[in-house]
Image (cartoon, rainbow, N blue to C red; front, top):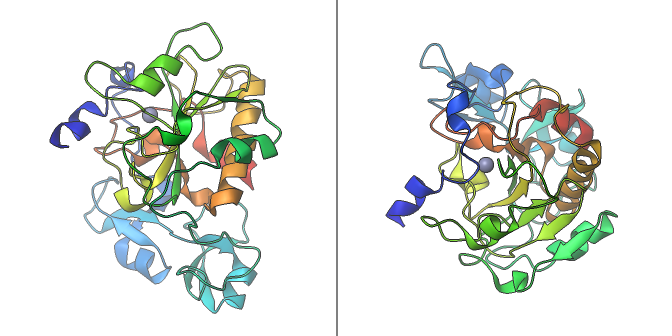
Length: 290
Ligand SMILES: [Zn+2]
């Protein structure tokens, strides 16, 4: 497994050298004093923000509606969750550790140590077109430990075709065995269900217990990755972009993944700047997830 982290960065990809810098913290606004972060209910991680050592990347493990937070016995903290103003970091309460929980917040991760054999049905329920790739239910590098995060990627693949990267995502590269992601998203908005188990898509992340290969679903959306931009989504077919949103929403609902834990590979990857995908605004994308 030693070689895994070295080679895992081969896929998505080739254009990484085009941009030397990228904010590794999921938001520059999340670079705050680590003590303040902890008081708000977040988890601070060093090495992802510029400035003094105490300024660290703050990630909230439970971004939910503030009323739902209070109803569950928690204390909502402002400023470290993306989305609407009512979505706050919920510290304490009974919603984070299994059992109970309000109806408005995301449920605790349900599947543990299992293959995600419900993926195709979950996506179909969202009304998107689904292709089940032969053998997907038993494909993977072991089982998923949990589903706590969703990682958004682009393939940096060929410029034409609906999902020409299927072979690579399913079978891997010469140096990295497939599958490289559970799901693929074509330019037409069609989803390919490729694997139900663990996939090599994340590499080292800001928190492998949430965003690592064992705990996060990987979605490789077909795209050249060019131009290497961090804003808008003008370089993406609208039908593909809207399908991306629909599919991710369905996955969030099915597995209880908070919007704050739907992050781009560029936000999750360490060291800082290792990845640039996807080449659209993750803030905009998350704002569509609700
Ligand atoms: Zn990626």
